[in-house]
Structure formats: C-alpha cells, structure tokens
Image (cartoon, rainbow, N blue to C red; front, side, top):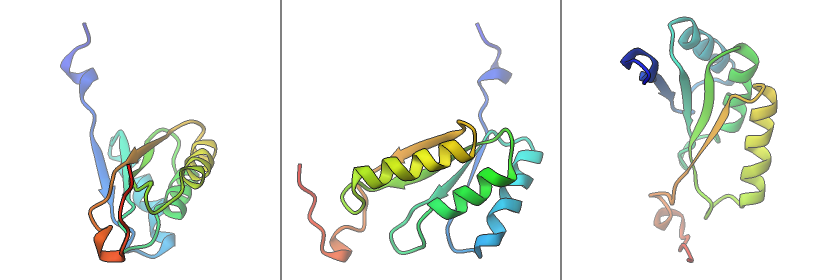
Length: 114
C-alpha cells in the first residue's frame, strides 16, 4: 500500500486575467516549489486557457497541466479535443482535461440540450 506521502497531490490554479508572458514563469515557479499540477481556469468571461497552458508546457518539465473546465455547450468537442491534444503534445504527455456544464450559459443565451 502506498504511503500517505505518495498519495499527496498539490496543485495550484490560475485565472486567465494575466498577460500571456506571465504564465510560463508562474508554472515554472509552481514546479520549483514542488507542486504536482497547475490548472488554468477557462471561465467564459476571461480569455481561453489554451495559450496560457501552451506557455506553461514550454516552461516546465514535470508538472501536470490542465484546464478547468471546458464547456462542451460553448466549445465544440472536436475543438476541445484538438486543443487538449496540442497541450498534451507540447507537454510530452502531461496534460489533463476538465469538462463542466458551465454556470454562465444563461448569461450568453445558450440553452444546453441533452
């Protein structure tokens, strides 16, 4: 059985309200401080998470990188798949994907269908 220390996962998340050039150094700092993962929010009222994640992939070697969370009602699943594949390639397999239904759909007039 793994020890408690091997089960520990420490992550940090960032909003996309910063200049693009800030994300690589932020992720590199998180990696140097021992974080296991960095998440970038993909909130509708901010910039998309994909370019910040690409900058983070270029600036890091170990840390897992992901988006939280992509909404399949406002971004087609094919586009989501292509974007996360790009991040996964740039990070040498360290990408993960969060998917959510979204809380702002009514704000932009989108009605989800089942």
